[in-house]
Length: 88
Image (cartoon, rainbow, N blue to C red):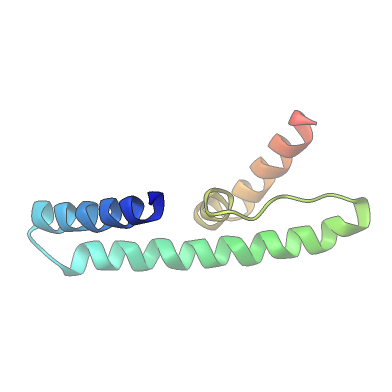
């Protein structure tokens, strides 16, 4: 039941952004840009986890951490490392 509500909210939110911007291409371009950054961040975190296996270190790969790493690149990965080490 919650999944249907989330899908409906995402669709309504997208339609609201399209209506507010009076253009269809800009929101789609932003969604494409964020999707690309999400993939780049996921790949970066995968390689960090691959190297981190040697020291038994793991950063979870989820949409928030992948987007942070994708948007901020190396400083974002460094921030995730500092947060992970600081929390422990």
